[in-house]
Length: 501
Ligand SMILES: NC(=O)c1ccc[n+]([C@@H]2O[C@H](COP(=O)([O-])OP(=O)(O)OC[C@H]3O[C@@H](n4cnc5c(N)ncnc54)[C@H](O)[C@@H]3O)[C@@H](O)[C@H]2O)c1
Ligand SMILES: O=P(O)(O)OC[C@@H](O)[C@@H](O)[C@H](O)[C@H](O)CO
Image 1 (tube, rainbow, N blue to C red):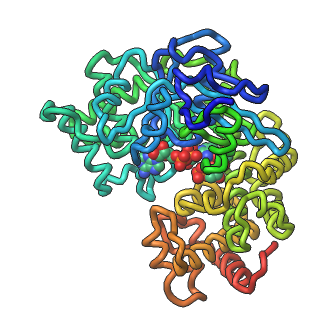
Image 2 (tube, rainbow, N blue to C red):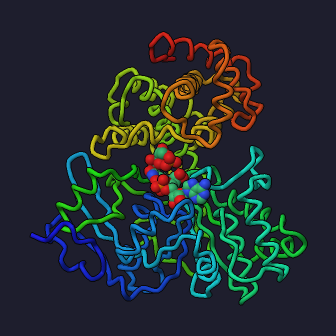
Image 3 (cartoon, helix red, strand yellow):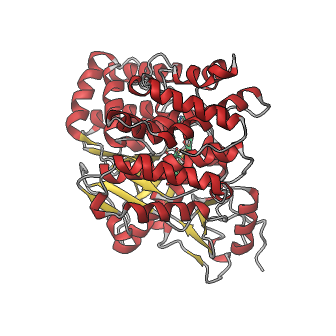
């Protein structure tokens, strides 16, 4: 029996357990060169794009698509993965099955806090053809209008560094980058200065029009750096592509229990372990400036139009996920699986999908939306992922506009007041009110604003939150009928009922 105190690494890989449920890596990691720089080396990238990339490499024998993973908020992930030579396991937890695969496509890791020079050089390297991102919604540092938040000191620091680099006044080693978009634009500037090779930026965050959204942020950030920045923006406009994507796999935060389970299987400790459901889907707009991995050979869909997939997924899956998270929190359910097993919550989730969301969708490629709803609810019911309601509930100010408010705006424009969506927002409002009052921290970049809005007379809670222009667009906040529904939902929840429409 291998010693479970030994860490997974290239040197220890052949000491791993050989149970049938353990596979990988699908190729020899030592033979891979970096061709992708990934910004936001969280759990999701490791369980999703890195796995698709590894499978594509295994299918073609191509060795040019190893990944450099960049983590910007803290060096912790680098500390976990560098001693493991980038190797990590993905523990797949189905309702009735468990398997573990070791992934070897991640070849390098970096923390821009002290390695900005190295990351910029990698983005600029001719062998790099793709920069991908999963930095969470708040990682984009946008204003309510969607432009780069130039008043944010982190954004301002990257813009100042970019300006100095473009004007040749920067000296010594690079100013540490503090934002993903700043890092990306500075890397593209260096690439243009060195050889002008085209590049493709693949956003894999859950955002509406994620590719075009990142493109607009990149162009505006470049243009904010003075006349040379404007010239850079014009070059990017022609040389860099920003395909849209739809990404789907439920990947909860890894727990010590997951690590213990994987160590028992593998016979090696794995600090970089991630956990996911068996299901995985990736739809990518086939609009690349240069070569790309043959992800379609790994099961991805490369298509001309991602929008119907993206809208369906964000509104049906993510909108329902957030609804389950807030109602689940209010009714004491720790996990999403427990929340969806609560009949009253499930009834509201079904009403949300059937009455509010589906009328706003055109099914992609003939997808049966009722069957999709069932598959989503079934995935949520998987008790073995352990996805917590608290994790899904975090950052509501960033998620709700993407997941629910598009549905609300479309229904209001069609002359219908979406009652289930109003109840979902009421659940968020009561959750914010309770979190603001209680001992648990409110995990949201707008926590201070939310806390201020939550204080005051309880009867005005819904209206004070709906008045926040950073979250609610005028077409939603301006509907008195919709406000009345949200208020009614808050009153019912306060009486301890799950409101149903
Ligand atoms: N986990 C999932 O089930 C899942 C599924 C589909 C899509 N996604 C997308 O992937 C994103 C990341 O999910 P995850 O599970 O990897 O989360 P995670 O918490 O494991 O990782 C988050 C990553 O984002 C970076 N980040 C966060 N805030 C940042 C900031 N302000 N500036 C710079 N970087 C920042 C972190 O450094 C980290 O690399 C989600 O927000 C979502 O858009 C996740
Ligand atoms: O990852 P977040 O925190 O942005 O959102 C939490 C979940 O709703 C989300 O990650 C889903 O699990 C995912 O979108 C499924 O593909």
